[in-house]
Amino acid sequence: MKLVSKSDILYTVIIGGAALALFFAFTLFGGSTVKITMHGKILYEGSIEKNDTITIKGDYTNIIRIENGEVWVESSTCPNQICVHSGKIRSGSIVCAPNGVVVFVEGGQTDAVSG
Amino acid sequence: MRFRDSTKKYVLCGVLTAMALCLSLADMTISSALSFLPGVKLGLANIVTLFAVYRLGGKYVAVITAARCILSGLLSGMLTMTFFSLAGGFLSLGVMLLLKNKISEIKLSVTGGIAHNCGQMIIAVLITSTAAVAWELPLLIVFGCISGFAMGIICKIILHRLKKAV
Image 1 (cartoon, rainbow over the protein chains, first blue to last red):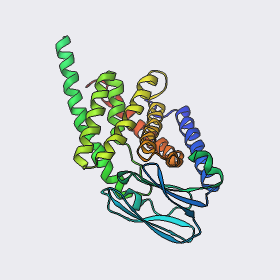
Image 2 (cartoon, one colour; image 1 turned 180 degrees about the vertical axis):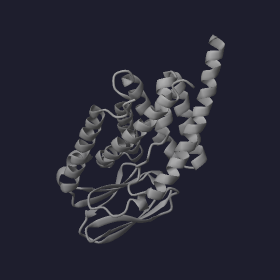
Image 3 (cartoon, each protein chain N blue to C red; image 1 turned 30 degrees about the horizontal axis):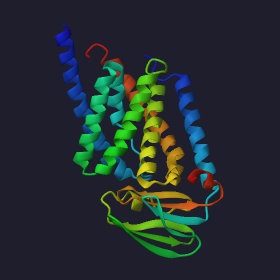
Image 4 (tube, each protein chain N blue to C red; image 1 turned 90 degrees about the vertical axis):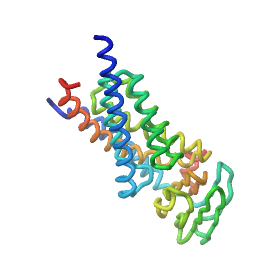
């Protein structure tokens, strides 16, 4: 039995490569404005260069920090802690699904994505 | 003969559900331990789904997938995750059933993995009402391709080995 054909590898590499290229394109054009939303409502908007600590209270409590051009969720009372494990970001987003909170960096090319 | 055939299918269905459930729980533990990017999983349960797509009919796989998603959500205590796995599971299942006889097992597994990522992202966008979270999708797809490829190989070996038994 032939396990893997050449076209299988080609198929995977082309799709994976295209997605990777797209990811780098998004990352390269990183944003400059931090926005925090809960269930789609904007709760915070500010420059990523301005240091700040924001506490978001909902079903759970998220503490979000902005420092040295990076944003991260410092602590959360939610059960899965995915947002805390997301680490520090300069572009893109951090999601706390249990609390309905999204932290994202907007600006430049990412506008096309965030609509 | 008909009766024996369907009994065999039901039993196989039960065994596969149990296996898929164990694999997805193990997957959660392994993935959260490795956790370098949230949402990235090995997709071990995909082996079972893929196997069932080839060996059982569409409705059997749908039952296995639904049972696996709901039970793993209840057992892990993370109900939000149930919606994520249901959306990912069924979108990937639908795509795989559609393309089953058109592309090879490994391509099918890769495509299913990508569909799974897309399904989960749709739920993430709906839950947060923020389109910006879709930013992470390309990176998820990269890992979806890799894991889909690996799971496809495993499934192909299993399908080959169990040619006579099942």
